[in-house]
Amino acid sequence: MLKVQETLSDGAIVWKVHVYKYELSDGQTKEIGEGGDGMPVYSQDQFKEFKPKLEEFRQLKKAGPGEDLGTYEETVEGRVFSFKREKYFLSDGTEVTWSVGTPK
Image: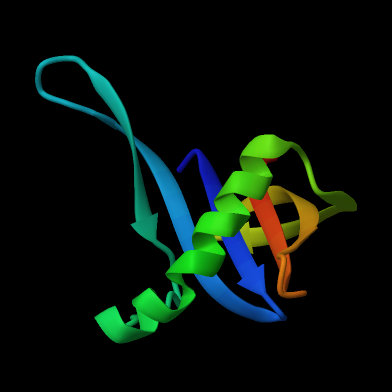
């Protein structure tokens, strides 16, 4: 596992992804994200409801870093990760926290 990504919206986890590095039979390596433990399953209607907010957040993240909330450590699948947290605000006032954890 290379990293863990979490997107939280107003205190509730919206998206949690574990990113793994795989070596393919032809020698290529590929990074693939998979739903992490506790990742909720959303219906298509639920996803359509929060997709515009997710797209706005992605654009904000591309534009630059959010407010630095510091770092913390957490054990994920038996490994300690150091998480860097950033906070963003969407146009409707929704608070989004983005965390990326890398192995320590």
